[in-house]
Image 1 (cartoon, rainbow, N blue to C red):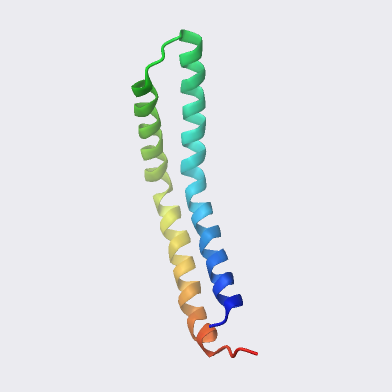
Image 2: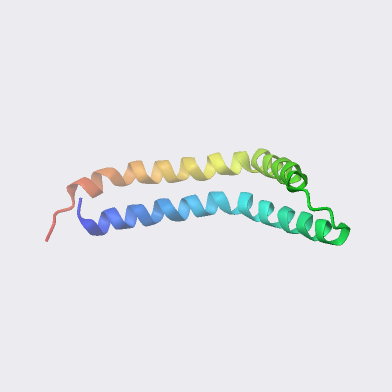
Length: 93
């Protein structure tokens, strides 16, 4: 395996991680922003108040997106396993 194929595989893995983490991070960001605005309006500055709604929203998103997560990971795993023989047999110039 040469450096270019290792870099390509690493790039594909990082893109896959970003796609899988994006829905969770987006929901956490939106819920945190809404709770922050609500706390600013009501002047209630309790740090534990924002934790529970974010946790619940993130758990709901994980439960709803779990089939999609498994599908994306299965596709990525199959693609990676198919590429292993090609990566091993590549010759360095």
